[in-house]
Length: 247
Image (cartoon, rainbow, N blue to C red):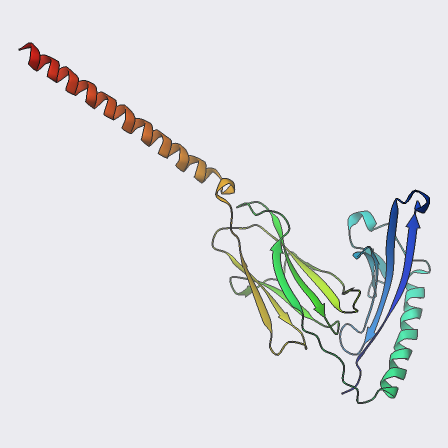
């Protein structure tokens, strides 16, 4: 089996206000070329978070968040594509040199969790994380009640970790309702078979909405009515006893 993946990490550490000991930021430019899909990737990460990535179809950098949309790399798509071409040539050299060397395969760790605390009927984001896998080729799909979802989904590029494994996030915009079951279906060559992680919303009683308030109010009124009834019953017995003694 041939080596199928070769990636280069360009690391640049920027120090801001070092004389005052204020901030140290780590900026990492990640170039990935490989056999298979995706065959190339570029993204810029600062302190472990993706700032922008190259959309090779649109031939431009795309900010991960709206506030990053104005950012761009020096030289733009042309410079990034030139570096990708160099790395593809390096990959070819390595494959020729290491012919027959098995490529490592490390299965992902998978987790699902909501972005914020869940409340019935309130929009939220469900996150599926695959972590620590290699090579950077993975398929992630959301399902609701065992039906695959295609709308309201956003997926990141491959984030590189310090041990040169990868992680990837996919996000689902959803509105939680009682009884709905969500799952994240993951396929990766490090897994013996596809893996599925399930998630079902659980809402604390104090956040379960007006129904809980109404039930509590009804219970309180019931207790008050019972107490009032007992008092009236006691008074009526006392009145009857007084009448009997007066006869």
